[in-house]
Amino acid sequence: MFGFTEGCLSVSRWDELNLFFAKSGALVIFGLNALRRKTIYNNKATGLWHFMNAASLIQYTIEKGYKNIYGWEFGNELSGDNEIGVEIDVVEYAYDTIALHQLIKDLYKNVTMKTPLVMAPGGFYDKNWYYYF
Image: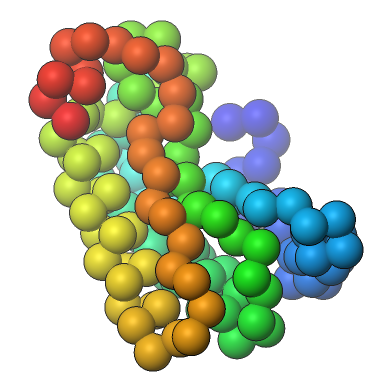
């Protein structure tokens, strides 16, 4: 989707962005790929979330001491009937969000910096979808 099938953020670019965040004083909410691993068929994503890329990025961020990450957002515009083209079942998305929360908790447990928020879902409001989330 959108031509970014193999990833698009290099470590050097992440370093440059974090330098900019630090110099500008920006607090950043960074969106993680919630579709990583999912089988996508008929605009529906299924399967367990492969978190290793996210874990590597977050661990690298911690090791570099980057403190401007206010939150890690789990996907974007994947909720309800108005999603951007791919839909994740609400229960599956909830389980994936719990997995991300646990990952963040584990990675930041021995770190002195403030633990960023886990933010999800980022997207459209669909009353029925949120009811089950």
